[in-house]
Image (cartoon, rainbow over all chains, first blue to last red; front, side, top):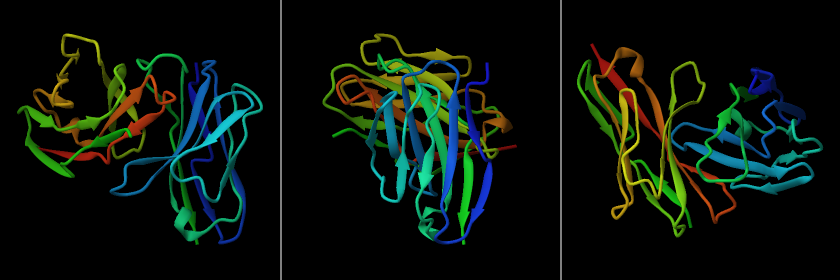
Length: 114
Length: 115
């Protein structure tokens, strides 16, 4: 059971480049989300999805797009990378129903924009 | 609005001593869950413990216990008999039944265990 798989683990981009961070889970979880982690700011929600075909914005969505064509996959797209998007990105998933389910996290992607 | 507050940016504890990491929360939900996660220097997020808002007893998982005081809206993590491997960032989080089941995280507490 792989859990939540994120790729790549590390990435360096030039300002203005675009890229997609991949996230896949094999637990049939309805709820998936993307967070960014910056020092002193905890985890901030970028986008989330409650099921295939349904996505919504979180706290810091600007500069990012998502789609959810299948239950398993939830890619995060950076449209035009900026140095302010240098961060560690986490994908997480959870069963949708019930507030007693915690997140399963991916291992994170460390992104540097130069 | 949902909010999680962790007021201790950094904490130090002597090896084998107990330590309490503070967490307070604000929610209008009657049904919610509280979670603690550990993030070691390697970066992964590790689930530690869960407490439901209707649970009457404090949750325990090995050396971890959650001191849940509902009226005060606090959910402090207690680590007993600290070990060097406990040095990490610790995040408190909440998930509410009536807020789209979104998770809200605190800003974290960095714990250092001193030999």
